[in-house]
Image (cartoon, rainbow, N blue to C red; front, side, top):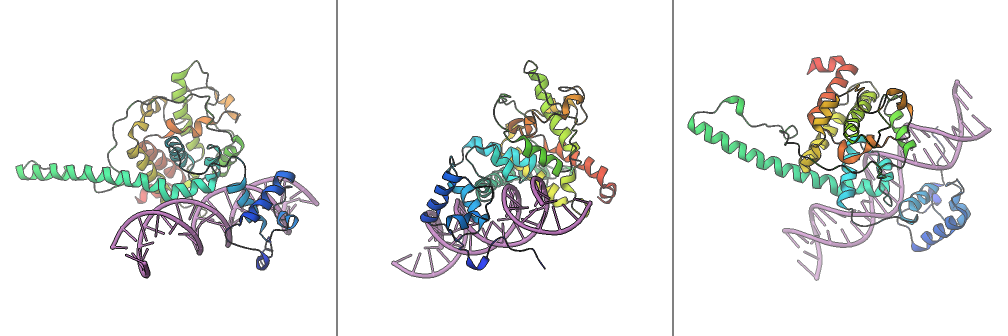
Length: 324
DNA sequence: AAATTAAGCAACCGCTCCACC
DNA sequence: CGGTGGAGCGGTTGCTTAATT
């Protein structure tokens, strides 16, 4: 026996909402609120809709201050950075973009942003490979070609561009407005609630701040124990890891200047960096977790990420590395 | 002009989480 | 502590519209 359905499936209307239905729902919620019970709401209004459907319609369309239309470059960047940091946690990503809904962002990512980035990466990789092959042919013709010089066949592991400087946004910018979601997310991902991360970063110590962000990010990744790549059967989820690396790679090539921070990242040490930011005693607070999802400086070098993931992998599944 | 294909988006489905009893 | 049910989330579907043949 399965679970009882949330509504009478035979008697509820499906499909697009009519303007009348929208008006009914909106005017009721405007006057009375949701009452904390979406299931009961359609009956109260006299709508032949499932409560879940009402909730979705309200959240994605009728709610005030919903922004429709084109995404800005800044929004693109935020989405990309957050996707790399936390994956497809659309609700958390949406929390960083006022007026955008998780559904909207999800659709935008799946239908446009992903293609945009992939297209750019493929194009660049293709031209790099062409020029590499040309050089190879020239060397072969002149008899100076060495087999070790052959072009990289793997589209997902190309050489990295040089890091270039990029200005940071200020620490005051409201990237994060849902700390509890993030906290939940960390716990969900297997992270400890006692993260050993620098959280309080004095505004007078900007250089330390830059270091802190990167070491903090890596600390958090480490605290997660790489658990996001371990599936329910405690097997390493190569597909998940590959996906993250591929996307990271896409971002790196679509926006090379974002590699900025790499040097200070190395300086700060990859993990367990005690010199960056504040002491671990301060780190139990979740008051300022902004650096975790701070978009522009968050995108680390993909080789470093690869390294970290492999380390995590070796820690979680020592046999995995041996088998490679 | 009609048929076909692709893209975009709204909505649904099924699952997990979590508060409450 | 376990069961229950509503809320919320992410993946997927399918309809509509635009572009192409």
